[in-house]
Length: 370
Image 1 (spheres, rainbow, N blue to C red):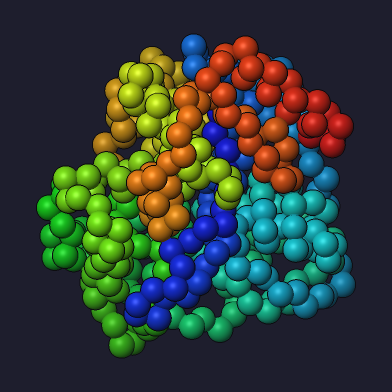
Image 2 (cartoon, helix red, strand yellow):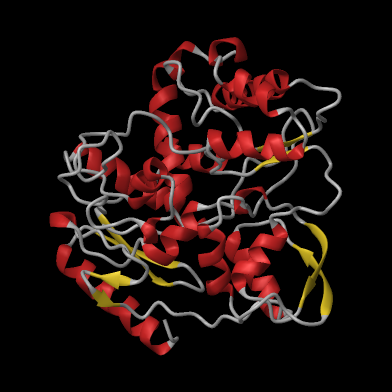
């Protein structure tokens, strides 16, 4: 089964100074758009790239134009609010990087990329994608508080707080005591997925790490209550929405949510790379065939386990929560992102039609030099 990736919808304007974030950055999903459409796995036909562009030992057409080195002449650019592809497209247009696709791959490979902030930055023309991401991740911009990006994991949020100035010991101590953060009983003591993505008007010298995390938990609870989600569904909705957040292209959250529900209803394994990617702590295209095998005995093996993973895999946006609560009708089981630039994604209940979509993607990839 294939997974695609994202992102446009966000939590939007909220109480407490929440900013509209209609295009978000995320680590996953982009990864899914680029990689989770390339490997047929088992009866469900999931497609993903493993071992840096090799499919069962055969080289796949994944190469994207990229420059070498750290660049030439300086240039001032406006880094947009958005995901890796949104940022990469802007930089490619100004010839900072050679292509958005190369930037996306470097973005997904850099653990610090999730903390990249929008704003005016001085960069250089014709940088390698890797060096561009590394420079942006330094975040040499004025910060208006603390920004938590949709899809961020607890570990990534910890790192963002530490880099922003909160003492590492304070952050880790607060995370280690979720019961003191107002975490609801429905979370089962698991903080993952309950730290709401948002821009928080807080600073290390005026707000403790624990108080910042309390705000994040409180915002998640507030949203669930606003959306009138029954408490007995809170955990299920947060976990499912976190998968949608990491899997779905911007315009297809609802359809991906429906695929997840259909697979659960028909006792199909989920088979979605974003889940294994979370567990192993690396982009999906870096996962080995062994890590993606249905014989690997780990709690987040989506090709082996029944039902949902034991925890969320990141912070879901409000848009992803809404998609889970009200997905469109459909009998889809498979999906393929057939165009990585537009992120057009096609859905089907037919294994034969899935193969047609796969061929469509391959034709597009060959024509566009992937």
